Length: 226
Image (tube, rainbow, N blue to C red; front, side, top):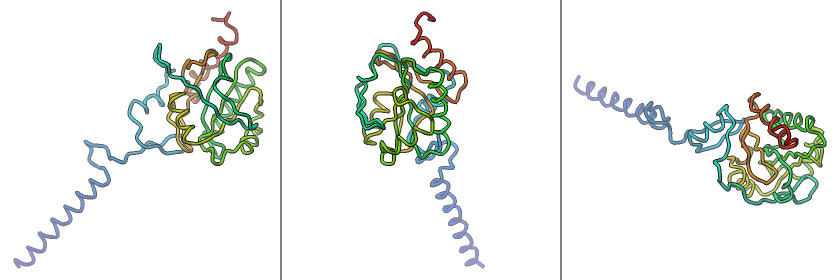
């Protein structure tokens, strides 16, 4: 009888220890988030986003860089035409920056439909749209040429850029303040003014923000409206 009780006690302790270890591994402690917590967005996965970064992506209000902050540096990437395009080439007119990849079946298509809408509204005017691939290994200039044709992208107004992924990560983070990675990007357009400074970040799925972006572009093109 004593042996049976002793064995039962050992088994009970083993079960408790097993559940405890499983709880720790799965991060089920309600007072502490799991160490390997990931954030899903735009049909992709990125590690290590802070609460502030997540809030900035989901914030329904238009955000702007702090006054006087020198966020921009020069960059140079390959356009679908094979030409090198630099930030210096874009000076003098406002432009809208976006990040995408051509094999994305959903969000990127919707995003580029929004840019197409902007292109149609401001056709022939002095504003440009700069789409930067976050999957440059697949998005060669030839691939981007075919992809751009799906949206009737005007090569003089809507640029599709590619290059080295490590460099594009730096362009996203250091130049345009956007966390990007392979097949990952935010759902924000970055509006850059004619002098090359970031004016603001606009969440394109938010109708109000998208309309504000149109209004701001219109102000740059017709200063008398301001």
